[in-house]
Structures are given as C-alpha cells and as structure tokens.
Image 1 (cartoon, rainbow, N blue to C red):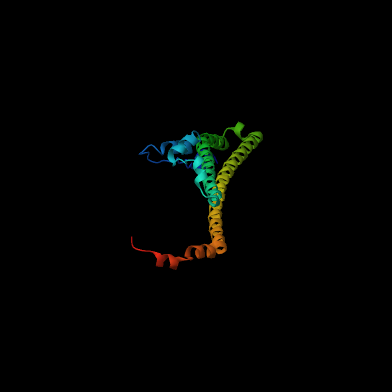
Image 2: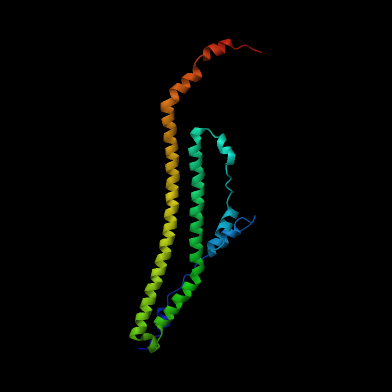
Length: 200
C-alpha cells in the first residue's frame, strides 16, 4: 500500500507567541523587545521600573537599630532586579531561538517522513533518531533554565516573607523586653505635669 506519509503523519505546529503590550508612555517597549529577543535586557528592564535611589550619606541619619532592616530591604529589591533580569534574558533567548529550532524540527520531520530510500537506510534512520534525541535534550535544557528562573523567583518571595516575619518577631521581642520600661518612663510624673500645666 502506497501511503503519503508526509500528509498522514505530519504534526500540527503550534507557533510560539511573543509577548506584546502597548507602549503609551515609552516604558514597555524595551521590556517587550528584550523578553522576545534576549538582548538589551538591562536597558529594557530599567526603562520599565521605578529607579532605586541610594541613601548615600543619609544612611547615617537612620537610627542604629533600624540600619540592618533598611539594608536588608534594599538588598531584597537588588536581588529581585537580578533575578528578573536573568529570567527575562532566558525567556528572550528561548523565544529568539524558537524559529531556528522549529525549522530544524520541520527538516527532521520531512526527512523522517520521506519516501526516499537514502533517507530510510539503517544509518539514515539512526541519524534521524540521534537528531531527535539531541533536539529533545536541547528542549530539556531550555525547560531547566526556565525552571531555575522560576525557582529563583520563589526563593526571593520566600526570603521577603521570611524577612517580614523576622521583623515582626524582632519588634515583638523588643516590645516584650523594653515595652514596660518605655511605657513607665513615658507615664512617670504625668499627673504632676498635667496638674502643673497652666493656660498661657
């Protein structure tokens, strides 16, 4: 039975969809370009976020007990920026490579479904199997890169939650430790001060 294998077994291709957004005020174009291509990531990202200012010498104006918290909160934003840049770059490179990979897969499909005897020799078939395995390995690598980016984002979210919980515990520790003394010092001689007050 003579069967048109190309028509019978050809898989339907689902094209990659690129990110898209309006750019009304010129803040999203760089992001969209970099998340679709993997290039210009730092510039595109910085165009779309609020600039993180530095404390500079004003850090010395912060009470000693709050400096560690301020530095940690600042570091959270820096770490988030780093993870976001890495994720955007990875996604952009995968999207940029998608058309080439699709062409490779289509060529392998055409060769696999070809009725040409040279394409169906034992060596030809083994070569196509090897090529398919290599494509599968490359796709697995891309999947792993995306999973690493997602995991990094989850770690940062966990760190933020941990820092917030630690701050709440630390405030409670300070309240339990020093709260009574602070309240007592504020309330001492309050009656005398109120009785001594006179209308100007």
